[in-house]
Length: 294
Image (cartoon, rainbow, N blue to C red; front, side, top):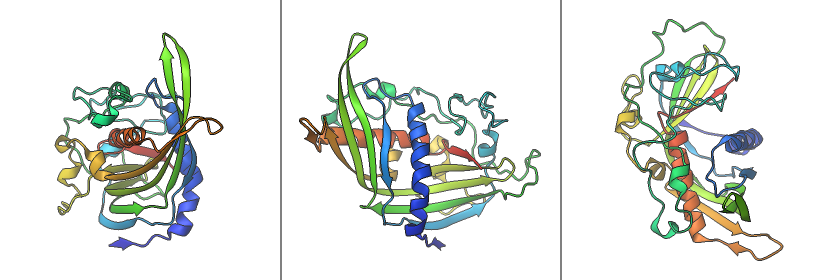
């Protein structure tokens, strides 16, 4: 079943809140040492609406609810599911990944390696879980009545846009000993993308909160509980970010506008695309997800 989005009315209402949330997330991230303060300067979702189809409607997976903190108070410790390690820096969001994995992350394209060779040690990597996933919620004794319904919707999303504008400001820091000897301002503008994903949206009325996650698109039919092989963390493959986000158009500008400026530096743009795809994998691809309290 297709969903017809009134994108012209829908998208502008999301921009301010989305930019604020993304900037809050960026300010809380551990960025590589060679990157200065990073923030989103402007965001316009454009006029190209994504193509959205409903794949499955069912019960909320138990893993989403088990991972919720017992309290929304930031000072209360998280209760991670099973053996997952959950940092407590971000009360809005549940983390289900380790900071460092035994598996080495994907390397940057060969012609960009000389630019920033230490990026791999500075990025969070996702971790697979040994437990089964996708357990349904309806048998949970902790489930309570709520005015907000509990339902999980899985959507097939294809978004091809050339009207998106996402402007990011940061700087390249050059260090010597313990001091910064040079700082080059960098402006990055995302001008288009192609996104192919299955979006998992779980509304939990018991909390109430909304869980959001992504997985690779799949043509395989859903089981009655909505599970597919693409959702199984034990079957996750490398380069998921490249398959979910195969095309990303980035324009770059390095230097002070009032002085000498380098524009459209290919190595920087390819590095940014690689880093964004790795970030997508470690932040949003199942079993990783965001939780927003309502």
